[in-house]
Length: 376
Image 1 (tube, one colour):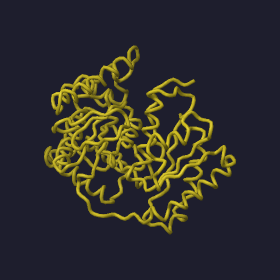
Image 2: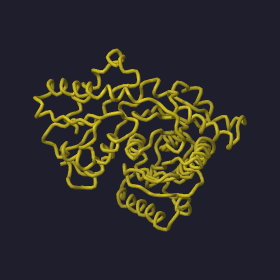
Image 3: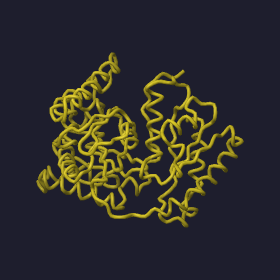
Image 4: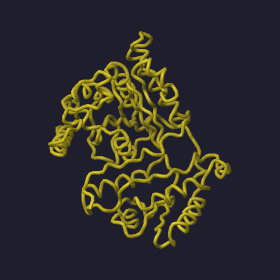
């Protein structure tokens, strides 16, 4: 919860590259802090959502181990979190309650000691070849422009069709950014029930945003407008293309564990860090992020591949962009070729090639669980 954030950050900061030198297979110790966990209604959908998100990260295959830290008097009790998310019996999970440990300084020392206990087993994990069916790709777009729906988004869709043919999973989200074109997805649903579940989420959003000038109700951001997108329908037409053309296998709520392969949908806001946090909690192990205006997002513990929609932006922000889909507009690659290039880049990233955001150290501030409920 929020009251343990300072302690969590201090524990992670202790493990500098020098202190981790003896553990070459450990990339780092990361802090995932957030602003809630108390002052909230419980039980409630928001409470359940927060626990699902924290549990999804603790179970995530990109994390070798996890330390859960709480204050002690919060609504989201550590013991309840562990029990509800099936974490109490996991050998690679430890927990710490600050009020029992003796306060801030004692909790930091105790947390450091617990992480040190976990490091040898984490270091024993080594890479091994596996098939692309192990990949779950979170699909995201941010800072979109008029070219996004012409180059980056459809090319990513082609790459996802290749992934699905190899048994992998493509996770489309950002429910406000399919509003108005949801029929493009429901007509691909494998059963009427799957299509109906997506329509139910759209109906929930209509009620959730009623009376507000949010994106769901048609108001796109200044960056989108400057990039040539006039309204949410124009943005949605491009955004939905990221999912490719294969059948829609399932619809999930935010941070629900994704247990079906193929093309699926996870309900989320369009706000990038919130959507990506939910995708990772659901099991995404790589994020593919298309952008026309330029985004600097990263997402520990999952690599973020950023796909530029146009060449001028790619060149201007090359330190942050991974793939230039603008070559399609330049006449240097067609849609099929660009999709293959993106798929190949995904395989390279999954095999250990660092993304631009990883090279820059971006991703430590992007853990943002969806805040649904009241604060009291």
